Structures are given as C-alpha cells and as structure tokens.
Amino acid sequence: MSDEPYLKLREFLDQFPLGFPQTPSGVEIKILKKLFTEEEAETTLLLTPVPEEVSQIAARSGLDVADLQRKLESLSKKGLVFRIRRQGKTLYNASPFMIGLYEYSVKKIDRELAALYKEYYETAYLKEMGASNVPGFKVVPIEKTIATNTVLLPFHKLKEDIREARKIAVADCVCRKEAHLNGEGCEHPLETCLSFGIAAEYYIENGIGREVTAEEAIKIVEKADQAGLVHAGANAKHLSNICNCCPCCCASMKGITQKGQEKHKYFNALFEAVVDEAACVGCAACIDRCPVGAITVEDIAAVEREKCLGCGLCAGTCPSDAINLHLREDGEEPFDRVVDMAMAILEGKKKNA
Image 1 (cartoon, rainbow, N blue to C red):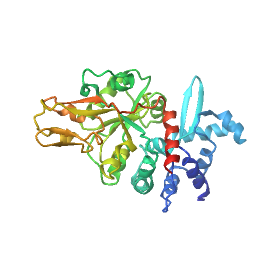
Image 2: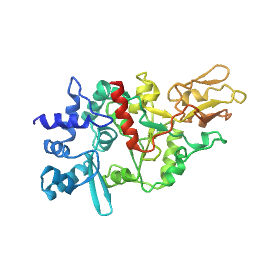
Image 3: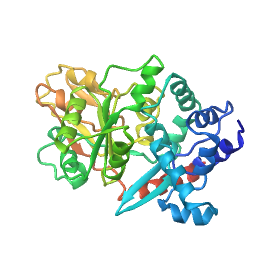
Image 4: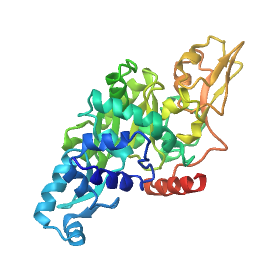
C-alpha cells in the first residue's frame, strides 16, 4: 500500500478551517488508511469543499461521468464525502475531519480506530480545535432555565428552532462510543446527537442516524438535560446540529475539564448563571451539576463567570429556584452562517500561527 495518496489527502484535509495536522508518529495517516482505500483517497482529492455535480468534477478531472458518479456515490454512502440531493440533482463535496469524517464513522468505529482517534486527539487535534480562538460551538440552554424577563432572539430558542426544522435525525455520540471502546467514558445516554436539514438527510440515507419528529428530538434534549449534558450547536444562528456533551468524553469539553484550556477556544457562552443570593439556601446541589467546576458554595452559591458555559444545568436542578440564566452583556453573537464561522476560524489560525 502506497502512502502517497494518503499524504496528499492529509495535506488536502489540512486546508479546512479545522484542519488535519501532521504528527511525528504519523497516526493521522493510519487513520486515513483505516477509512480510505488508495483509490478512494485519490478520488476524494478530485473534490472541493463546495458542493458540485458530478459533471463539473468530471469535466475538471477529465474522467468518465458515469464511472465517477459510481465512485462518489460509494464514497458518500461510506461517510467519506458529503452528499446533497436537491431538485433531482446530486452534489458532492469533500468532508473535513471534524465535523465530518470523525462523526460519520460512528457506525464503523472499532477498537483500533478508537485508539487511533484518541492518540491523534492527544498529540494534535486538541491543539488544532483551539488554534483559532474562535469557538466552533455555541451553548444553547433549555428555555425554562432562562430568566423570564429576558428578550430572546430566534437562535436562543432551542425548542422553537427544533420545531421549525425541515428534517431531523438522531445518531449515537461518536465521542462516547470512542471512549467506551478505549475502556473509558461514562454511562450518559448514547443516542443524543441531533442533526437538521441536509445533514439529517445524509445521516438518515446512510443509516448512521434515524429520522425523528420535532417532539421526539425535544424529548431527547430534555432527557440529555436531566442527565447533565450540555446542549451545543455550531456557533451560527442557523441550527444545523445539537451535540449533547459530557465533560469526560466530548472532544471540546475535555479540553476544558481535563486539559485546562480556556472555554472560549471551544464554546461561545451566550448566557451566564446568576445567583439570587436572597433565595439561595446553600444546599450545593448546583456544584455536582456544573460540568466545568464553575460553582463554589460557602454560605451561598457563587459562579465564576469566566468558567461558566451558560448551559443552565445548575438552574434546572436548584430546589429553591435561586439560579437563572441571563444573557451576557459582553457576549458574542453567533455567526450568521456556518461558512462565516469557518472563514473566521481560518483567519484566527493565521493570526495565531
């Protein structure tokens, strides 16, 4: 097996906003060899990050349209390239490692691949995820934890956003599956990763997720909330996904809870927890619920706002209703579109290089 197609594919994937950096051990090449055949790697190199019809790709590469169509459809069904079906047309584009190849491997991940993913995260990808200092996720709490007099914009309203989605899919959390295969992790619910629109169609058609109604999706979020998971979606106003993250397995959360990284590298906290000192009874129920250790209790609870994700888990469990979420006055609005976020991440990486 030649390394050349995989070396070229690594360089290609490294051009995405969340890239695919090289390591001294070459573990990233082992991952690509596990996912792609040589021919599949070479075919993927014909694509761009922009969705295109096969005829466009074939014209550029000088290949037969029918043969290329067969290869790209096979790659898309394996979760190795992304596919969009619209108005009788099928378009294909290259997928980044994350969000992309990593998540799409949720049904085929085994112990070998899980070990490779863990090694790559530890040696390169944790740094890559935080290299831009532009958070890739926004934290979106359940509305019942938000102060009642708060004026909310549409992207703050999680349940309303879900109800407006055209198509919804739920899949297993690949982070927790990876951890379990490595003999680590937790007992939090597994089927918790929601995707919407074209991403949901991809998950459903590929059999890596199942279709759910809006009300089923809301119940999944509510159960995740009860389990103490943080609801996070892409840091854009448009709802494309919701991850329900735990502090022990989630690639972003681990950066904060296990590696001591500052939260803004990964999460845009739209809200902050505020304690009503008169109502707080100092029961400390909130301490165990906070996934990032942002709360201390002496006589009453105190929140370290620089650590607080604004997830609302503490507010949801407070027996005296002494904690509510408030919009951060110094908060950052999510990007208008995911592509705007991607460009900001690229610029941030250049600035911090």
